Image 1 (cartoon, rainbow, N blue to C red):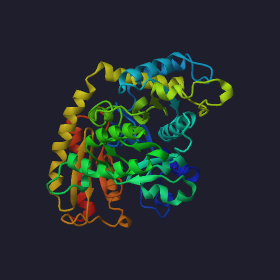
Image 2: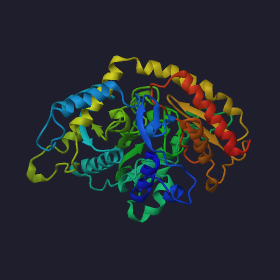
Image 3: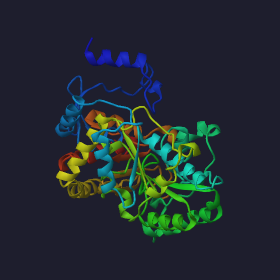
Image 4: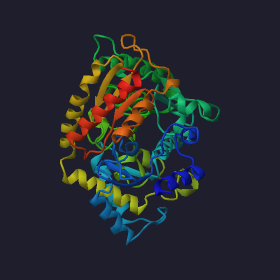
Length: 453
């Protein structure tokens, strides 16, 4: 029996995979389980030696390719010095250096860094910190949060509560705090004569109304700047961020920017907020922070927020949130090595060229009879399938059309993982223009198969 078959059998006997209906991979299932042996650059390799181009950056985390020599070397070096130490009452060089660098790189005014383990945990930190800030400042009545329709912020209960993708949250609704949800500024819904900026201004009326009515009881508004990733890669104009920052200031409400998926160059700027340009009260980062190597998350906030917790112990105003692996030195060194690549190479300039190639390569799909829209923000591109192009009627979700794109991609050596009926590309930044053309070709073939064209 070959190694890969043995590994797959052992896996199915022991593991429960994330975001997966396990029956799809069982004896009655129709999906193959990939046994990956190694990775290099944009490529993953299975035990038979077949390669797959990682078009989704392994769930949006990998920025500079698998087995990057610089990040590898940094982790090996750190491993010989310090693998981990409690961050409560202790410190170490990598965590201080990373904090200093993030403060320099992020929008102005974000001068304090709080560490967590993953994206959902970062969102939990920001939510709790905002609520606790208002409590410490004498406003315990502020207990609510405002989010956008179609938003996603993670799958722990607090993060899930401020999301609005029903696929993830509906089952757990009885366990979650109530929130206010306002319509998204999604540019997919633009009229024939509207720009995306027009949509942003039109849709902001709903947010303005919610803030006017509920600011007295609201801690914060939370958004994914520019791209609602898990919600089908829906995109909106930076004008909405500008309007939102101004309104939050006017109404005395915090702004939480969840850049877990879109930070570190994905949208064309190092941080999506720069396109507002705005500075949030809380900035959540994870995923690409370590180049896709190790779990690590941070929440950056202001000195004003920090000062609300800085007090005598007896007043019990401290922020007592913690994670065992907070500020892990190995993860911090991976993050520092990742930031070194941004500092030493023209990453954003190169991404501009790659994004242009992606736009050109996918443009022909706009004329496909079952494609409603080809959209793109920086290094994130999406193709939305519909049953009726003129009416934009979606295919029934039960038909799982996107899986046909996924299956076809595997036969051609491409790892594509559509979100429902939305195929997308979010590749590592070390991809070549020829490899982008290859992915666009495979995507087009897969869409033909999925739609019966």
